Image (tube, rainbow, N blue to C red; front, top):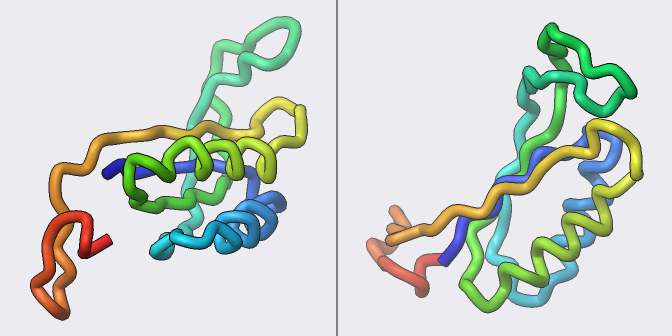
Length: 109
């Protein structure tokens, strides 16, 4: 199992979410507004100070065989080609517990 955290432009978030929901075995996702502090390294002369911007974070946990498909959807739906399109992080998940039922592991995803 993997956790995917995508940081995308707010104006692209609905498109990314809609495309992810079309995946047949996507169990669900979490969406939140986050403040991102990053260096503006996309300009011809990178700046020294840190820029703050609001972005949308989309988090989902998927089985290993869904990772590439989910990444492809996020990359295509969130792409503008402009500086600040965002980033996607993939982390391993060792266990999941569904609170309501007590089910653990892949069945809880």
